[in-house]
Amino acid sequence: MSLRHKSREYALQMLFQWEMGKQEPARIEEGFWKNVSSQKSTRDFANQLFENAAARADEIDPIISTHAKNWRIERMPAIDRAILRLSLAELRTAGTPSKVVINEALELAKKFSSEDAAPFINGILDAAVKSFAEKSAG
Image 1 (spheres, rainbow, N blue to C red):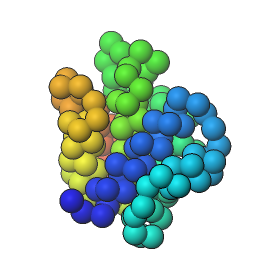
Image 2 (cartoon, rainbow, N blue to C red):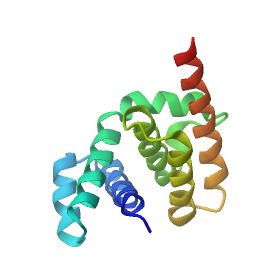
Image 3 (tube, rainbow, N blue to C red):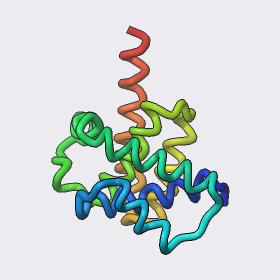
Image 4 (cartoon, rainbow, N blue to C red):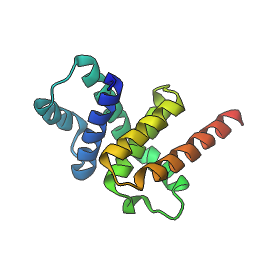
């Protein structure tokens, strides 16, 4: 497993915890890293992803809502929301290729969510990527 993939797993776990309690990201990170050991680069990338997604949740949630046909965001499983927020934040700011981000999101969904989550998440992310491309081309 790549270090970046492990970072995404850690970031997802922190984002899920943030979603449940809305604590300050720094407090979540402090508690999380007391129980998890990792390389500094893995920890740094995880913190960057987590902080970015938490800070941009209000900007990202309307994107999710736009592309989640017949689903209100508050009715989605919290883990699926977290995967979508994490992925969309990375797509918007990190410069990671969209195929990589989507593939990573699907792997996270398969590991942490339900059987139906991966196709659902794939559909939303694919539609969002196409929308971003249309906006940047126009």
